[in-house]
Every structure is written in C-alpha cells, then in structure tokens.
Picture 1: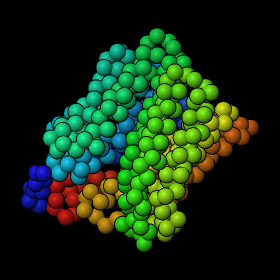
Picture 2: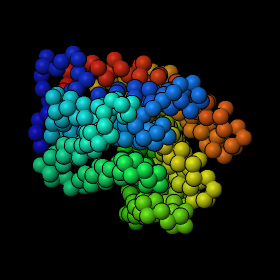
Picture 3: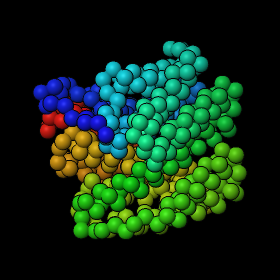
Length: 390
C-alpha cells in the first residue's frame, strides 16, 4: 500500500480535478438539472428540440449515460483509492476523462453539430476508460473482490453501443431494450455499493449493530438481478415479470437487515434507506405486467436518483475532510427527490392526471438538485479543509 498523503501546503486551492468525485458529482448534478429542464420544457410544449435520435431517446439515454454513469464513475474512482490505498486518478488524466464524458453531452443536443458516428465513438470510450483506471489499481493491489465493477462497466459500454446501433438502424425496440438493460445494470452497481456502505454507515452513526452478511441472500440478490437483465435483453416478457418479482422480494429482504428503523433522525442515513427501497418497489411493479413505466421510474427517480443525491451529499463532505453534517436545507432536497418519485409514480398509475403529476415531479427534481448544486459547489471546488489530498 502506497502513502497517498501529501503536505497540506502542496494542495491547490482550486481542487476540482483532485479526485474523481469532484468533477463528476458537480458536473453530473448540473447536467441532470439542465437535462430535465430541457426535457420538461420540450415535453410540455414550451420549446422546440432537435437532438440526435429523437427527444424521447435523448431523454432516456442522457439520464442514464450522461447523468447516472457520471456519478457512478465519480464514486468508483474515489472509492478505489480507499479500497486499494493507491492514489486515485487526478489532474490531467481526470480532465481528459471528464472531457470524454462531456463532449457527447454537448454534441447530442443538436444533430447538426456532429455526426452520430463521431458522437458515438467518443461516448463509448468513457466506460472502458473508467474501467481501465479502476482495473489498474485493483490489479496492482490484488483486490479481486473489487474487480467486479470492471466487467459491469464494460457491459454498460455494450448496451450503450446497442442503443446507438438501434438509432443507426432505426430499430426503436432495440434502443428501448438497451436503455432498460442499462438501468438494470446500474441497479446492480447500486446493489453492490449499497450492500457495502448503507449498513456500514448505519452501524457507525447509530446504536444498531449489523449482522454478518447471509451468503445465500447475497448470491440470490445478484443472480436474480442477472436473470432480470437477461430477460430484458432477450425480451422475454413472462420471464421478466417472474424474475423481477423474485428480485424485488430478495432485495427487500436484504434491505430489511440494514437497520433502517434506527435512522429517522439522521438525514444522511434515512435518505439512503428510503431511496434504496424504491428499487425493490419498482421491480415488483414491473412484475405486475401492468405498471412497467411506473416501476421503471420508481427505480430511476427514487432508487438511482435518490441514492445518487444521498451519496453525493455524504461523500462530498467525508472526502473533503468535513463533518458529516450537511446544511439543514439539504434535508429538504432529500424530501423533494422522494416527492418527485411519488409524483412520477402517480403519473404512471393515474393517467387521467398524468400531466399535473409529471409537472410536479419535474419541479421537485429541479429544486432538489438545485439545492445540492448551490450548497455543494464551493465544497467540490475547494481543497479539503484538513489539508489532505483529494
């Protein structure tokens, strides 16, 4: 294990590229604000919008491969330093990785700015480059347990390629299947990370003591999610319903062992627990065969969006040497993302009130991430308060 500490005086005051979480959390959050603003304005008839593909594809693709993957990359590139004790990617290499992520986000906004093939080539490079940075540290430290994220990142590249191929061949079924499969792969990442950090954080901050992991429950969690992904990829409707129902029940049992009832007074904890709950809820809605859209949005808004907001709020404090006490208004941001999820669920379940509920969901999402951006931008731009690197 290498010493990753540097003298306090050597730390730059502007530290956006000091570690992976900084640029990807900040720019990812800003991008989510812009992307939902653009999508909402277009869908509600306020603006014209001509991105690559079409606005529906752009919305799904960019929230998955623009927003969610950026936050996952930022978290993994930061966590790998803690896991291995080796210096994380920073400086110019991190700037290049951010540029590879950012260029497609800009170019996809207008189909006249660059050919789809050029945008695709740049965009498809992001996940494998992130995987290479991770693999380099994991292999050097021989931490095989953490190598699992490398093939998942490569699979995300493949389903992203499928979504682009669907556009190039005018196959909307393929693009939809690819994007839905990408969501489930990201659920797998969240399930892996959540199973490690949520009970750990809960035990550290409360009187609750966690029990050892149940090996068969952990195995069933990821086997069931893998079956759901396969059913989605091969468009097996019945198998999708059965496997989604089983995965939802298994993830719910797993979540129930993490001490959530002890976290009511700690926003940084209950936000994680409540957000994670939306994943099994969404899977069980998909299992009904009648509420696929509602289930998918429970997973994406509540499960992925809520977990992302809660993790960014905590990691940004911890990795900048600050106390784990966010500004009080950040609790409102957690409440708003939950409300956004509930309104989007109601929009899918009560279609006669679709537009009002959708508008409410959009407003809640925008306010939630605006609060994060306003209060965390100085934290993510400035050096750690304890003078340590990162």
